[in-house]
Length: 123
Image (tube, rainbow, N blue to C red):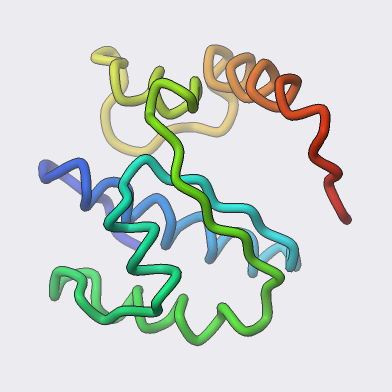
């Protein structure tokens, strides 16, 4: 895994999806719902396209090999509809990797999940 560094929002979204799928697979979480605010990234994942920047190619090929193990849902969402992502995108005080225990992010995830009470999470 590598840090995204300075780049485009598309690259950050792509790296986030690569990281999330790897983490899910490592933990054995085989039911996965990926929401992305980049329609292009959603299409790449839905079609298993190889049209990614070369620096992501090895990681991308790896997650494409993992996808058959998952029951996967991929959806597009406006960034403003995804409060945790919106907080991270607008958060100037944070740089680099996000620690999992950042209070604001955990609270935003909890609020976001509470708005999806109709979604049944399968373990």
